[in-house]
Image 1 (cartoon, rainbow, N blue to C red):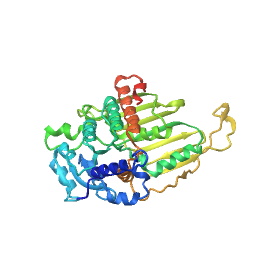
Image 2 (tube, one colour):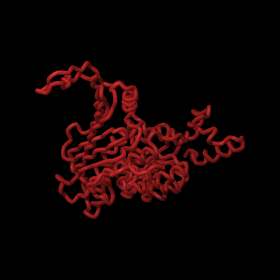
Image 3 (tube, rainbow, N blue to C red):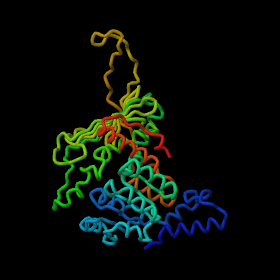
Image 4 (tube, rainbow, N blue to C red):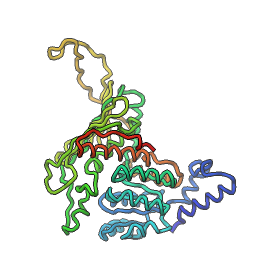
Length: 402
């Protein structure tokens, strides 16, 4: 087994001190021999949570060339066995705290249910591990704020699994917006729809809440946290700020099966300068499942899973009679649209995100999706849920700012 990165860090700190160089002056990513350092300090990583998402992450981790995937943990033995089918040398743990005690492990990927994110991350920080934490960052606003403080104080690398921040498609979209190609953007519309009851089969009724945790408020933030959080994070990024307030409506109107989290949710966010974002997530219709529309004064960008098309409105506008109304702007027929060209290097957003996590563990650079951006998205998610449940506008508070 390769030398733990923790011991490599200690050695590097001692050498830097002897030379009168602080880490703030000469961090890893400024070293001239970065490639050699990366080759000698490939981090060892453990996975906590081996469910459907965790198993998908395990498959990616096993193929990354900048991380050593050496351990996994789940309370269900069959989940561990599924990961070990990928690589029989992966050490399995039933207790995540024992995994955290393994001195050979430098970093952890946490893919547990939402209600466990805070406690597991807190314990990982105390154990000196860097963390890739699946979205949403934490179960509550209080937990989110405390976790941000702990990360800043400890110097831990914490990357939140909002993987679209690492996908070149969205960087191209951000470039188009920032260059003003679609004019002034004041409106966003997003949907994340599934035609599914979200229910997973349960062999033992005693395991119902454990397996179908997404359906119960005690454990989950529902569709806003599990689905819509992705697009909320993207809009926060594009706008460059968290929302100032939100209204919302939600309900359990179709899947009346004992669930507690909504099977449909709609929220309207307002951002600085009057920017609005409509967010919809439902579980009874999957038409055009994932979409984001960015509406500018000179055009629109329609974003699908792995593509984006720009429709221009930058044409001469004529004033005439429309439907009997004099002086109205005659609507122009939409053009065919132009697909934005980008290079994803043949990798999925999650592959890019996990690879960059490995780079940040070594370089100590702040991830693109970090404790601050993750906090803003998590709080936006919780604000929407509160707005729906209380049927009252929720506002961003000054106390949310670190």
